[in-house]
Length: 256
Image 1 (spheres, helix red, strand yellow):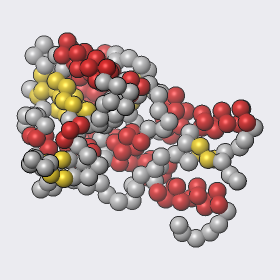
Image 2 (cartoon, one colour):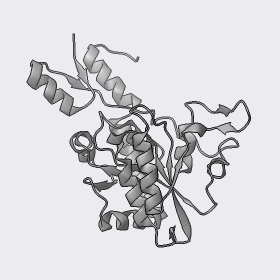
Image 3 (spheres, one colour):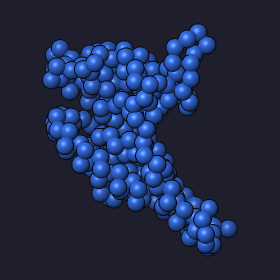
């Protein structure tokens, strides 16, 4: 029997508590397959969720539970706006894609109240999202999470803690700029690999806002960052890397 864990912190704890050695097998993604783009189905996604043509879409692609730290995303968007809620002529919209309710609805209501007080346009669109695209029984489209990534201008990932961080790897796959809180597993297993994100340590500073503004104003910088991150994703979090780990674990040869 061989033991597998999802991050090095769990590896350390398993060894300390049980004296058991283990291998880290992280979240992976199919980086060898190019990400999809805008098509006939998702071309109207922004319009469908109420965004104007010039709006900036800040995407929070997670469930609505307290450990996701979504209040930090609200603070970021608030600070990106001037007194009229605009930045360089564009509105800033924060879009949450996943359901609330796993741990009750209190956190969602707190976020909605916080956003309203800060003048942040928060769009909770879980009722328009599903694992697969489709059409509602009464009409209207249901979009996939990938449709949201395609249209995002910036991804917020301010989690307080995670087992690993699948949404972060998804954002890398879709070549999006990301704000990430340095949660413990990120600090131990992802950050040291050389990815370029806007990093925070539990709070949104003026420097944070300046970094995000600079990225949004510089498409060449965003593209170079996205390509670097994508290459690192291929190296460390791809299906090919998973195959290598499984070969080592099982001690065999050949292709799975």
